[in-house]
Amino acid sequence: MSDYQVTNPSTGEVEKEFPTATDAEVQDALARSHAEYGEWRTTSKDERAQVLRRVADLYDERADELAAIIAREMGKPVREGKGEIKLVSSIFRYYADQGPTLLADAPLDPAMGGSAIVRKESVGPLLGIMPWNFPYYQVARFAAPNLMVGNTILLKHAPQCPESALAIERIFADAGLPADAYINLFATNDQSADIIADPRVVGVSVTGSERAGSAVAEVAGRNLKKVVLELGGSDPFILLDADDLGAAVKSAVRGRMGNAGQACNGAKRMIVVDDLYDDFVEQFTAAMGSLTPGDPFDQSSGFGPLSSDAAATTLLEQVEDAVSKGATLRTGGTRLDRPGAFVEATVLTDVTPDMRAYREELFGPAAVVYRVADAAEAVALANDSSFGLGGVVWSSDTTKAQQVADQLDTGMVWINSAQGSAADLPFGGTKRSGVGRELGPYGIDEFVNKKLIYTPAG
Image 1 (cartoon, rainbow, N blue to C red):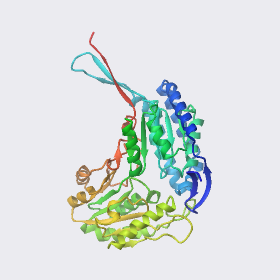
Image 2: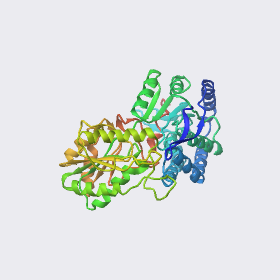
Image 3: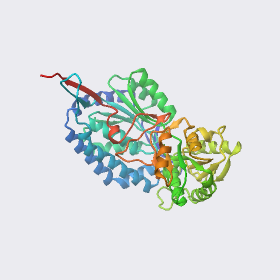
Image 4: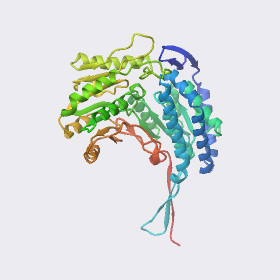
């Protein structure tokens, strides 16, 4: 059985298999990527931007087809898939429009006299190792800036996303990108380690689990390769006060339930001050309980299945562990009695540090609600996590919210808004959520040579 296959999470049935790359095919791809780098790096910024604009257009034109692919591969409702594709096209357009300016020479004023600039140059072939939860978006935020820079890309997608991986490669080809500037590889983990170690590859970007990030970082460090790692999160949603509690609840539900709760930067820990706690729990539990999982092709479905049987099993084990140790199950906690990886929207309270749900990321439609006395206790609880990706602070007093945001050990904070992503805003975390940034002006700086060119005074 191949590693790369489409297993429909709505039915549990394997629909199609794809052959894993041979070692010879991997070596051939490395050689082609390296050879093409010598050509692609010499193209003008305007030429690269033109290709990225065409890529954006093709994503928009093929939105229906692309959304249907990932509905089958990982269960994302078609309406959410189209939203992902809209974000993807905006990322390619952002780097097409802003790339030439972001890559412009930066002048310096040397104290020793003379003149100096810092020039951003490409560095070489890169390996991207991408996850299944946002099959197009994760690739876009890595590929768009680096193709704009002039690097070439080898892309290992998640084994359960082979059709979307091929669709991405086809879009690049149809947009006029040279064939070897972006190469899809159905590689194994061992082959990926060999690619990282190969001297022709200069860096690797990974979005995935802590385990995957640690394994890649170990190989990269041993071979002195640059890494960008985005490794998940257990983001807090801190509710300090609210003129409109309903709006806060709606935002919390949205932040938790996007992509069936399978988002790294989804709000997973609701931290609520004491005087709002009871009302919030009541409204939040009712809202979560009203959402019904169903067929991702059905517009009436509240959310889709989890990505796999294994994902559903893991989430329910975390919930069962918490309940067995004294947590209160407010709603959900059950797998639907039907084919597919469908789990009810779940709310837990009274979770304590001895429970898995306190320390681990809940990657699915499950949230934990905590009661705190004040902002100081909210910050302490929010920071009591090995993760540090993002977070939300909700308050009618934005100054107070910003003060709390300043104290959070995270890479991103959203005030009075469900967390999201935008092409022009940097994305990334701290602590065990990873290193580096993607998107925005910072995303184009990760894999560049910032070359100093100094000229003495005449």
